[in-house]
Length: 477
Figure 1: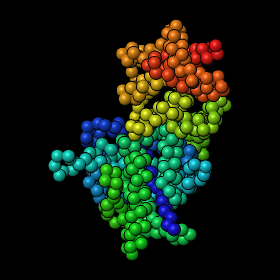
Figure 2: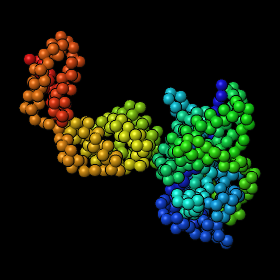
Figure 3: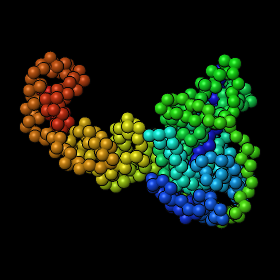
Figure 4: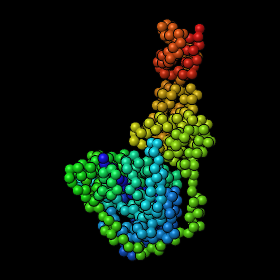
């Protein structure tokens, strides 16, 4: 009956070493207000100087997002007052952005869809407000003022939170592969504004939209979309009128509240930035940037399938994230077991990360360590359960542990004593004549029962291959 209509504004901080209009550092985590100067603080008489690396990064993104690149790109002043914006305006782009009319293909389940990008522009970031835990005070930190951003503005093409998440994962992957941003949402280097309205299915006219600002996790984005969609539907069905407004999302409470009425472009009194000349981008420049692009996810996926005989499914999962693809190839350089490495990454490792709400961005898993664990399991020196326990310890430790030391400390060495294994098999087989008769009668599934009993007797430390071999030999007598 109801349809949700969503458009996104995605802010991605570019990983240049210095800010967009001055030489201040962009490094994350510095003490408040230690990476500022008269330019990024907007002090009288200070003039901006454009960082050319920002243009290169933005051009790379525009190419990857299939945008038309503006040959003349102009900066504008976006005027508004907020405590984290000391000069009371932001240098952004409205009329002549660097890119427009782009498109990003996504896939949700078996359904493929193209999301249109209205525009992609360059701008400077604002500062950050720190709310005290101990009193009712708020403190501004201006370190982030002037950090370069690209803002990717989509058309209202989304109809579900699943489509939104698929698109954001694609945006994140593209930016990581290009090397233009780390996209660490927990650090604010990728933030999302959600413009959402609802309408009756079949209607062409859009409903009144609200904007939910600066959400910085996929889970919170999903929750915010579901909450706001339900809130608007309930309001309309109760006879209320939806007000165009900006809302703040509280993930802890799973609810939102109104911050202010939603501004339109005219409210910001945009005009061309008088202290910066227009940027003229030549065809030669665009082609030189295009030629410098690294291997992207789709081409890497095809290479994984052709070079390592991986399935489309496995290759898609491994290349969705640059960190995952690099872990796979670095581990592969240590042990040439592509399918085994893929299985360990896709199943147990991903399960451990999901349970902790983490990604490989957060856990720098050491490829040497990872290869060592897989090698010890496949060679029978430890069993798979022990290998998974060690992998969990690695994730908990932040990516690296002393594998041999852990194995010794927890007595994980596999029992490789052929005599002990044979004796245990004979004991278990002799104690279960009925099961032996079933096996002789053709019920081969009973073999699993014997394997389980032997492994239980040997506390799970026996070499599974040797146990199977010994059981088959004993049952054939």
